[in-house]
Structure formats: C-alpha cells, structure tokens
Image (cartoon, rainbow, N blue to C red; front, side, top):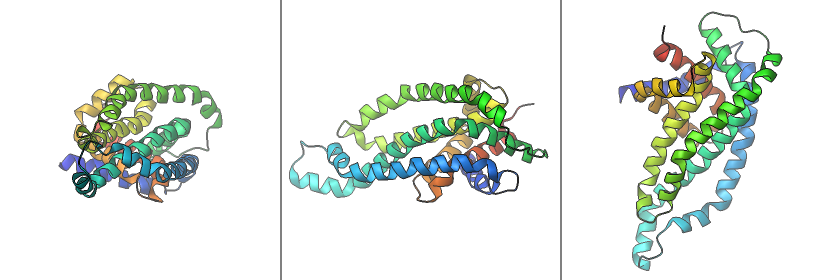
Amino acid sequence: MQNMVKGARYLVQGFSLINQPGIRRFAYLPMLINTLLFSVALWFGLSNFGGWLDALMPTWLPAWLESILTWLIWPLFILLLAIIVFFSFSVIANILAAPFNGILAEMVEKKMTGGSPPDMPWAQLLKDTPKMIFNELRKVAYLLMWVLPLLILSLIPGLNLFAPLLWLLFSSWTLALDYHDYPMGNHQLAFRQQRELLRQNRGLALGFGGATMLATMIPILNFLVIPAAVAGATKLYLENIQQG
C-alpha cells in the first residue's frame, strides 16, 4: 500500500513538472490532443449512458427486485461505463500524441539530470513518428488480449458486478505500462523488458496507473493528464526503476 501511495504521488509531481520552464512548451501539443479527445469522450458517454445502463441490468429479475438493485448497484455500473469510455479514448489519444510524448519524456529527463532542453527537434519528431505509432499499436494489441474477456464479463448479468474492480485494476496496470513506455523506450528497453521491470515494481506501477485512471475522469484535470503522466512516469522511472 505504501508503494501504491508513492506511485500515485508521481502523477501529482508530473503536473508540477510540465509547468516548469523548458518543459512547458513540449506539453502543449499532447495537452491539445487530450482536450479534443476527452471532450468527444464526455459527449459520447453522456449521450449513450442511459441505454448502456439499461443493457447492463439483468432482465430476468422481478420488477421489485430490479428496482432495488438499480439503486444499490447503479454506482458500480456508472464506474464501469466511465472506466471503459475514458480508457478507450485514452488509448486513442496516446496513439495520436505518441511522437510528442517521447520527446516530452526526453526533455523531462534532461531537466531532471541537469541538462538544458533544446528547441523542439522537429526533424527527430518526423523521423521517429512511424516508430512511435507502431509502438502504440503494439501496445494496443497486447491490451486487446485482456480487453475482450473483460468486455464479455461486463455483459454477463450477475458476473458484471465484479467488472468495475477488474477494469480498475486492468486500467491501472495498462496505463502505467503505457506511460512508462516513453522514458523506457528512450533507453532502448524492449516492451517485454518494460513489463518485467514494472512487475518488479508492481505497487508503484498500480499506484501511478490508478491515480492516472482517476484523473482522466475529473473534468478539466483530465485535459492535462497525458503530459503530466508522461512527466510523472519519467520521474518515477529515473528515481526507482532505472538500472545502472
């Protein structure tokens, strides 16, 4: 539990890092992408919420029992739907922002290690864009192996009562894996190595990922999540995981 709290604090520190001179300008584009995508996510979720909630409720229960259960478990279903919607749009936002996130992680590391961040390296950005997008698609493929069983579970009446907790744990892990890919990738660590290092620091990873997941569901704050999470993950990696 102590490591989970410690991991969550790195997201808070990330918000501070992206406002520092020399770092701020590298956070603008990921922030803009995040703002647009989460605005769409909010509209999409609110527009379809009622229909989704009705679909998740068991239809074979007596009306009086269904009415009671609606009041008892609807908060769980709200949490489930919020996690699924915002997690899905987080994945899309990170694919679009991937080239900028890698550079942001590099600039945060230079700032922390005493280097002087240079001007925006546009040539490097253009060169690395296909590689960064491919890395994001590779992560999506990894996530789909776990997302599909969770989606099926979420649609089974009765069993879907456990879905919100499972989605929260899954989202916490995958968001930690996603954002740590930027600093770790800058150090030439393969995706398999990244997963192993985070497993060895599971408490820190889940704490960081859980805080990131919750931040994505807070209005206004969620617009800043992508650059703050990249910066926070970079700091967490440098201070706790980096070897040698």
